[in-house]
Image (cartoon, rainbow, N blue to C red; front, side, top):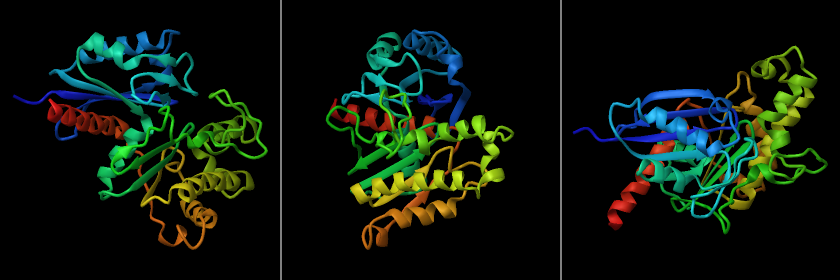
Length: 305
């Protein structure tokens, strides 16, 4: 009998992705829709449960587990969504318990970028190492840190909030409730704001093609480099992965970003031994990564039992 699917879900600040991932890590029944089409009501947990129920009803075999990557802070036990800065009405939600009671299968939660890191670690054949870090620049800034093969959660579960380091001189309000966070200046929200205010005739996807050599865009890329360098200087990782929708944009100046990362990193070490891997931004990346994460959890659970 063919094995059941693991349902991988990637909830981003912009899009909602879901797929049924089999043993060969092939995604079937993949769906990508604007996140607002799922969370179109204030009861976001109920909306999520209803969407998953409808999705599972269309599958040709059973689901073994559900794994969800969230653009949010989670508690240390990875059962409660604490806060999602870019999605309204997502605070203190008992996601895992509610969905497990409804579907009677294991439900695993992690940050969306942690699911991306699981995928990229396999894709780029990164060997076992002490510290692996991923910096992903999309709507905001995502950060995942793996120490000796395990995601670093932190005391309260909120480790790796790199997008919320303070940016000197900024007083911009952030969805996290603070002001002056780096993701307002080095994430996709900043580019969208430029196109609304200064580059009004430019579609955001073409902003680097049209204005990539201008000071505003070069400063933006330099802030991305500062963010990555901050991670490197603190953690001295074996590998640092840089990805997300922003570096994947058309005509994004990757060479300039690389130069600025090296410029900001401490010398001679860790700059001398720096290993930066620029990742691709596949549509089902975090969906498959979520399934990989869940498969590892299920294996551990079965070994214990």
